Amino acid sequence: MFQRRTLYFLLLSLLLTSCSSNPNNLPSSYPTYDPFVPLQGTGAAIDQNSTSLPSPTRTQGPTPTRAPLSVTIPPRNPDAPLVTPTPDVPKSLPTPRLEANQYTVAAGDTLGSIAQNYGVSVDALKQANGLTDENLLTIGQTLNVPPPEPSASGSSFKIVPDSELVYGPASAQFDVDTFIKNEGGYLASYTEQVNDETLTGSQVITLVAQDYSVNPRLLIALLEYRSGWVKNANPTTLDYPLGLVRSGHADLYRQLTWAANELNRGFYLWQANAIGTWVLGDGSVVPIDPTINPGTAGVQDVFSILDDRTTWNTDISAFGLFQTYFFLFGNPFDLAIEPLTPVDLSQPRMDLPFEPGAIWAFTGGPHAGWDSGSAWAAIDFAPSDVMGCATSGQWVTAIADGFIVRADNGAVMEDLDGDGYEQTGWDVLYMHMAAQDRVGAGTYIYTGDYIGHPSCEGGIANAAHLHIVRKYNGEWIAADGSLPFRLGGWVSSGNGTEYDGYLKRGTSTLEAAEGISDLNQISH
Image 1 (cartoon, rainbow, N blue to C red):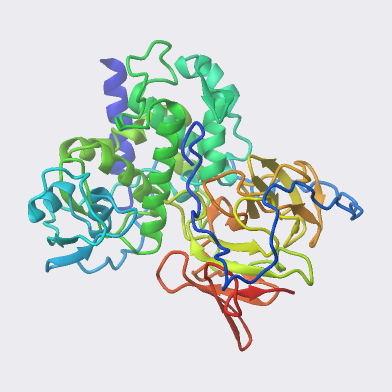
Image 2 (image 1 turned 135 degrees about the horizontal axis):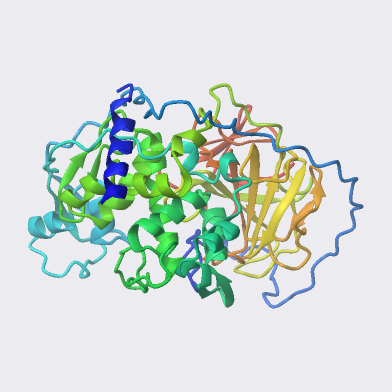
């Protein structure tokens, strides 16, 4: 009782001083289109079974001295008062929909995804259309979509700063394994098979943090809050430690990939001013308070899927996840790096990701960088020498100088600021790189050096291609936003539809499309 009373007054004082890829062989989703649709039967026949690839012939350049950590956090003054952050400048939220709509079901739709896009509950959709089974949808079916019926607005309490949601500078020197072992809970002895490899609990946390670019401290706090896995050696909740009881989501990895994807979804939708309400587990439609930050929006989104309104109000309060985080790591706002992306940020020089003279196709405009929840940070290029998932003989080349900080499971991450941490500064992800001849982690590369061969490795794809993405301080940088890709003079843009988009250079414009044609063919 004494400990709880102490906690109550501690958190009360904090408030009063305020100024106001799918687990286990189900990798994260990637494009499933075939970028090389046959063109009137033209084109050379390709041996799909051929494994003969050109050997690297370039001489590796010198490796510079590793730079010091490019972003550091000043230590907190222990005598400074605990204060909550000021509210963000209120957002101008999307105008609520007041009239019913009609929607035509397309391939890949579910009732849940349609409900999420329109900001209504699944039950509301079922009732409006007389549906008894939400799984019985047919392509071309017309659905009536009722307007949302909002309840009271959500909380303005800030849970975490943006820099504590992303895999950013404050996590660069956080030792996940040591922290988990020192806590001595169930997580410290946990193991799981992920993609045919046995991983420890800390390795699962790190893998999800890296892939989704989500802060491992936040994942750990969420896990402890929901199940006690971090401190309790014998927790009662084992199969679904985050409480998402859904087919295909048992075990730690699948629970965390779901949570990381939703943390990203809330963060980037709020950042892009693309969402104004949460639909809770009980069907409540909650207008989002316009003064919260994207990091808080990400956490609110996760709990909106798990909770009814009463539980949600608690989980996003000072006595919810914030309290657990506070006792594990201290005040999250002591670790804030603001702004995470400076207003005057500009992209360093980057070249096209293939050799001069090679012909490639621009097959994917701006789309999600990792899974479905992140910013539309990726664009895709496909080589011209193979069809399907045969490994290409063409080379993906470095678009800038930098250190390779990791290279496995089809992914190559390049750090451009020279400190060897992907959590700081500019980074580039080259995805679907074949294992054969792939550049190794720890290598320093120069613009134009070989990264590897495009393939289908590392994600769901049915054709060899390069999925290329940028991050800054751990934040996925949108390819259709204020900092578009600039690759050898080509500038990316979008049209509001995922995978559609353009590359423009001077008076030339290429449009992303499946196949290869004059509309999307590109070379140096």
